[in-house]
Image (tube, rainbow, N blue to C red; front, side):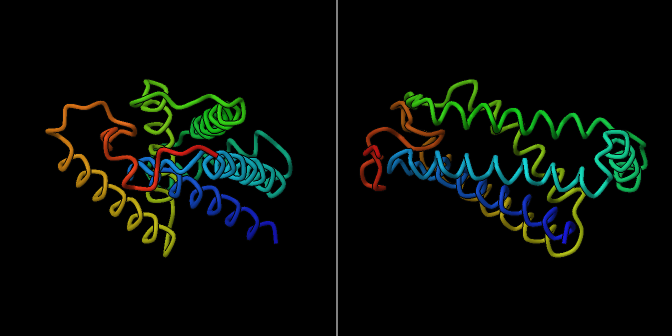
Length: 186
């Protein structure tokens, strides 16, 4: 049971992050309610994943570090437990964004440094966890989703590279947000 909880909590969090990232790439702005709840439910799933991992390893931080070091050595040949701290940072960043969503922080035109850092780091952890360290069908599905999102990202970037207007998302010019159903709030 705990193994299923461990696997499905992170899968739920990653599915919600995929939805959030797709919304960003496509520039969909139909209000922040869906976005806020995706961040919130994703954070709950991540915290449940951490609790399931600790429960499976006897509630010992040392055991978590040892398990991480063994897994890192299995995949890379280098015994390193620092990935645990990277996962904590992942949860912290996710939590900060969730708090920002609930505090009613309104998105400004264009992407901020925070958005680039947040998504850059979250994607780094997702790729490591869901592709590099994963096995079997999870790896295949995660790789497929990443490739599709990358393809959409680069297609949108290519289409919009000559447009000098400020963008709503990283790729969507402000003048076109209404045609994609955006522009409204909750």
